[in-house]
Length: 137
Image 1 (cartoon, one colour):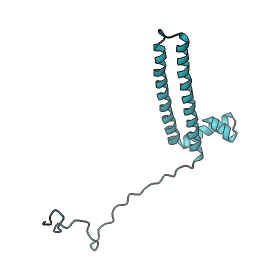
Image 2 (cartoon, rainbow, N blue to C red):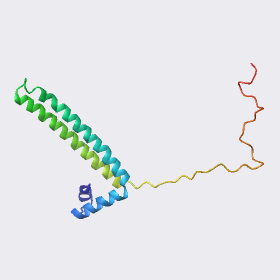
Image 3 (spheres, rainbow, N blue to C red):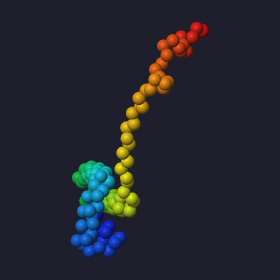
């Protein structure tokens, strides 16, 4: 995350690290949410790549070693491309957190109904009033 401050604001190493720590302190919820979701996506990509790489390895006794190695390298390069894409997405999310204004916390006051005064109409249902099921057909 400190690389954002180095690139965008031209900070040196320790200033960028301090700015990243401050950002984590002030916007902990947003940073944690971004880290969690991109971390889960990275973990899914890892499990998928680990499972898919077993496919060419399963043919190691049947196919030539070059084809098996090519399959493993293809899966590895595909995994690395997906992970780099996720890394750039995470950095873009951190930049959005940094650039967007901080959301104001709005407290909604729970307003109770005003007390019933003698002159105020009652909200109770009149038991003598006919409803549709009581009206003769």
